[in-house]
Image (cartoon, rainbow over all chains, first blue to last red; front, side, top):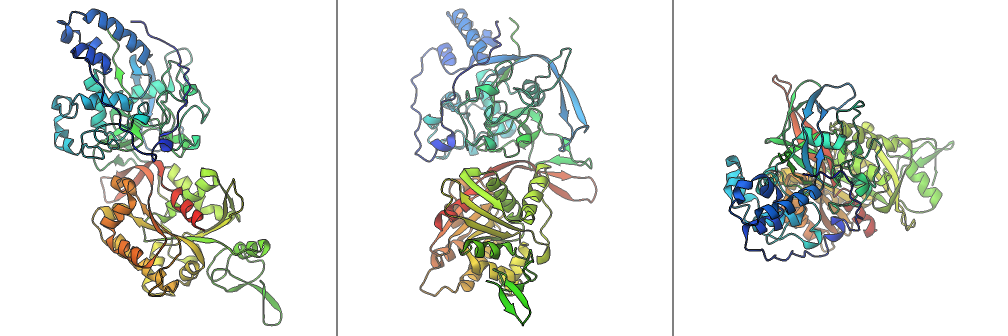
Length: 326
Length: 294
């Protein structure tokens, strides 16, 4: 499979969510789906399901052709993160010289963009919230509370099971860790763990010079390369905005716009060695968001967490995939 | 404005408590309010526009005030803020430096002489006509409660409120949303106290703009959806008092901490809350609303 190493150069050309919201909710239209399951999966962006689970589609006569198209789509939407080494702060006080845990990461594919409202709509429309096979058993009792503003299954800030179509290209927010996980599984992907995420953002690849970047674009803060509080947008931007902040492999918005769920449990201590825990299980979130006030909390190696059931306005996610064997 | 006391000395009255102070005094010897307030008022020939903040202990006044001042200093929403005196920056610095290191700032001491006063002149950059004197002591919630329970215990509270053209009342939404009546009772007492300080008649509603800021709202997400509805449901006594006695009240939801964790040891050292990261939401809006009301 060809892997693209390029940076997209699209203009953001879009207003922030803060500017759009407050002018009336505009529910997205219900799409008409093709009848063929394979075509449906392709239409819904379940690329991982198509390319990584060939046995599922063996009896589809046009599978080979669809798979070729899907591989091209994967190449467009995912980027290779090479193997590397990351040093994850071991305490909540990430000071120079402080204790760190070194982790070697294997190469993997990471989505160039965060999952959008339009992407997530496919999952909702396909009955993802009702498909128990996508949810860990320990969350089943909570599924009933994963509702939108009108009591229907969906992200917290949606209405009537529809996203606001003016925010179609914005990252989906108001989803807890388990909703992110369920979506990723439904689409044939997974969530990156925090070491993988940090590798993608700090680009500490194995080479003669194993320097770690503070930001995906380099070491200097540039508020035009990301959407944090100091950037002044006051809300989310479309997932392809801030093209100047792309990582070398073209992955966008690892810094800012929304925090991103990872699959890693949060384990940390304070200076006295006391464990730092939440009310419930905490999962690591990375990257900072549009409302991150301190710029140093929106860097490639800043480590924080949220309760796994939190459905905040500033946490979204992006998907990852293992390298395909062929 | 200087006044003669006796035959030899000329004293400047504090704008908050009216106590005479020597001309070179930086802060009032009685209430510790910044004397720059009166000097500026004289120099600019205009009445000061004092906005104050009150709230119960642990409602989040210090953190809120620190971030508000810092955001204003960083020209958020086209505001421009000038600290009048280096002492004004202390509170902001304390809050920011602690929160940046994932710690809450120390509890405000009960003693008035140890409160951090902040005096900023604030305006919208585009207009430059409507300057607001943001004069706010970071008062201990216990002191406010003591003054409300027994007026004149902390005279400065009464004097400050009497001089204010706008008020921010901070109420702990997390506690209220959790079923505690304490925030509702404190807020009810505060509004009742204000009613008596401002001397509203029985048939006349008080027109002072009051922004009721529901803090720690990240714990109760529905508070952000509709703060007034949240207040009507969870702070019903306060809601009714506002409806009956005050004509310009607006409810706001606010949060500063993006995610809260706890450091727990194996021994008896207790549990320490840890603000893992900041995520400011609704900090500036209440203040902006008050400025627009003036």
